[in-house]
Image 1 (tube, rainbow, N blue to C red):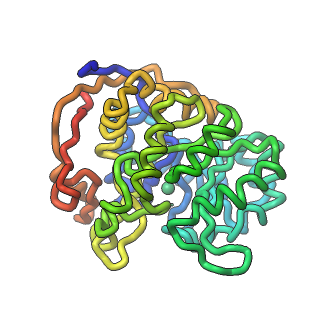
Image 2: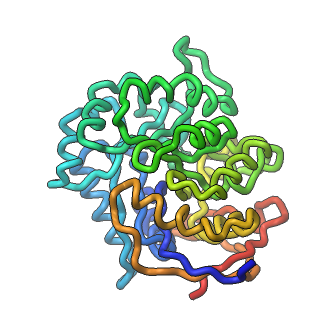
Amino acid sequence: MSDTITIKKPFDSHVHLRRGAMLRAVTPITAEKFCSAIVMPNTDPPIETCEQAAEYKKEILGALPRGVSFEPLMTLYLTKNLTPVDIEKGAAGDVCEIHAVKSYPYGATTNSQWGYRSILEAKDVLKKMEEVGMPLLLHGEVHVDENEHEVDAYEGEKRFIEDVLPRLLEQYPNLKISLEHLSTKIAAEFLEKNGKADKLVATVTPHHLLYAREDVESKPLLRCKPLIKSAADRDKVRELVAEGLPFISAGTDSAPHPESKKFASPAAFGVFNSPVAVELYTQVFDEMNALDKLEGFLSVNGPRFFGVEVSTETITLVKKDWQVTEPVTTDEGINIWPIGDVKHGLGNETVHWQIKQ
Ligand code: DOR
Ligand code: ZN
């Protein structure tokens, strides 16, 4: 197998850049490794109007190092304040072009307190999205069910795939949907069967490809939603990405938190992986003997779904060991620890691929 690979510059279909000092610390890292990214709207306060998205985009562009070109693609949070008028305005793009709307199930994860309990409640907004072709990005977990019972967090994605997604697909047959950070065998099988490049797609994180529940339950840096599942789930998701399907793309879900929140009890949900994500994806594809499928997954399928250009730049990766040993530190002195860090990891943190400078 080859020890070097050149691919079009990657596209991150799912990233959290936060605001303020955190944004200034993490944005240059994403911009160095990715040509463009779909930026999540779950800041505090949430991004729920085109005006807020425009202001947020300006802050991101302001954090780019001189000479770096990076296109942040903005999204709106599906809060109860979001209306069909916002969708029309976002699609028209006069104030700020909106590329997707993100749904968080109420209470399931970081800053999800503004979400609906069930996506099926958001009828008028979903109708309008279907009409104008605005993609819906789903945090596909049932957190509280229809009888107000809290669902076991390991079962939330399964419940969503079984109980909610089929109804959503039936009620909105033309809605463009992306199932985010797919983490279970059942979700992978659902996508294998029903995925379609311009209609029903999914993103996969590096951490859901690398780790299994048994290994990570005591590791705060790997605590995230959806939770990391069993080895069997992980292995099915690995198999799915290695198939090279046009509707599966890289969404890092890089979600930075200050060390005070990650090493608190309970640890905040979110894995910070942007310093090492492209390299880890490459490692997984190499392990799966599927490096020929890497470019589609990392650089082509995401932009195609969102109707934007694939990058004309390229990056080259070489097979060479290295380790992450330091946190990223904000200009206010706050540390953010990436996964792959040797101090807090599982003991097997050597990364086997590097981006050639
Ligand atoms: O682990 C997660 N962290 N999952 C999410 O859905 C949100 C994210 C965050 O914003 O920290
Ligand atoms: Zn996320």
